[in-house]
Length: 223
Image (cartoon, rainbow, N blue to C red; front, top):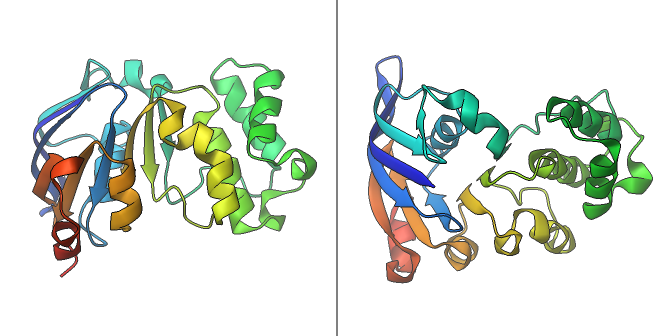
């Protein structure tokens, strides 16, 4: 599903990702740990085709990036720090807009609104909704087109335990999708992971199967 070999991505002279290599099989979950500025969001943006790698080899869904980015975009769902939604529009209007991009009908929109328990508030502008509701709308948007690969940047931010259980069929392990997610929570992150990547200043200082990782190794990334 994902193969990285010596991936490098720069911002000016600074290397946001430096010599990152790993492999993730179909159906597995990669959890990425690291302090703020470590490169977690940059990695997700490279995998989503929003950023081009400067060097190294990046394979996503059996396609090479960036040259085959066109063939990958419609098969990936990205949930970032920003919800990628129009705050002046309602949740229903936002999802209908994205549905048109993927040639989906309104029935799929209503299915996702129900899945994230937003049907009753679906016609209110997003700017009037709570952060948790906006996050649920963003999760609906990211999964609307039934992507094969989910890229999730702190996906449970602003969600209470009930909401986390609500969205689990869409973005949790039970979704059956291959996932890459960033986390600052060792216990929750390791519980979901098949493979763990630890980043510090853009470098992969930890790449292991989740069962081989100790909690203190995760804690050490933040010291």
